[in-house]
Image (cartoon, rainbow, N blue to C red; front, side, top):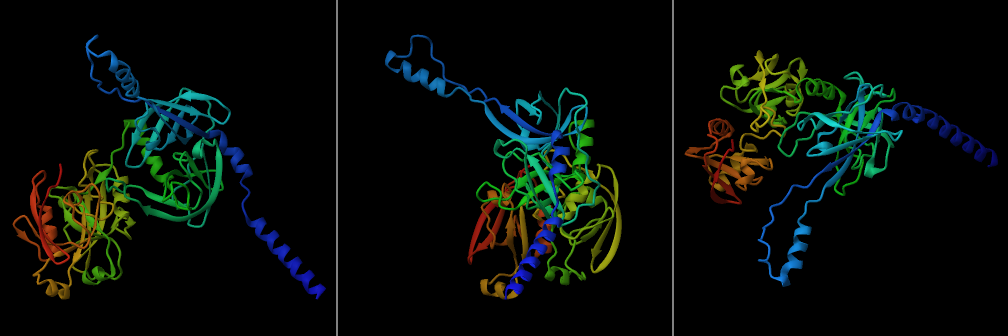
Length: 458
């Protein structure tokens, strides 16, 4: 019995020692890269408020103290925030998140050796959530970006930043997914995020995500949390996106992106069968904006884009990632499925205007109204005594559909004077809807017909 216990103990200790030997040692990596990681403090000065002024002597003495107290309370107070960043060139260029410095009047950059600098914004890009700063310094320690396409799911990664103001904190984990599509509040989707289980909290934003070679593979940007703290879902902007953004911010102070002019959605199993696709893949074209690059290039509603500029489009969210990386005016080869046949096209991408909302890269698959719809099956049509219609499956916030208070489950049967019998008719009608013009929309909700108006904003 004693010999068996001794054998089990030795085996357990040997296994534990072997497992520990396989875990990475981050100490050398942290020592090498920490000098180039910075803490960023910002101050946004409060804007002056208009306070009613009274001529001297017109305020009764009994109210004078109250009035002066109110004036003191209305005096604007500066807002302070913090984040992280890192040096990308020894002459003082620093990369961080757009949301870290957005609206800041003062930006202070602090290094681990207690050196402190005032930074200016070279350029900032809301869509990628990246900002390029500049400080007056020379011979700074720098970080290098990893080569694209080397990062794999399951790889060890390490983050350095200042969560909750705790300077130069180090957390580690693994890559849990690549190419995550996370639409912004405006429904845009131009970043194929890296998902990790590295603990990221407020203050980590803009800090670097490293591989085991000490190269930057991503810029920490977001967390998914219901409590506000890390729960094992954090997202980083890939280095490949950052490199292109940095070049444009340096040269122009802003980023220009490719644009197609289509509304897209995912292809599910039933749609794949109806479109004669072998597998559910690609970006299904819901609508094409007239005179857009897609329209001029021969794209039609009902087409399924499966490859764009040499890259495979697995989900609809992959398309805006690829299109957005192309420079306006650049040509791209496109492979589509149309009526069950594979077809190749060549087109020039347009330029995405900074204030444009009805963009080709509708990241969540919604159309010009902010909707995703599906066919209504025959059984439900008969039950509701409908000739046709399309059911709302999803809608974007801050969209025309949201303003009209549509809900998932509503069945749209009429737009303007046009009856909607199926998705083809729906796509054709919404493609021709004018902007800034209220249009009647009729739909069924829980068996009851409702009329409202819907308007596509400029």
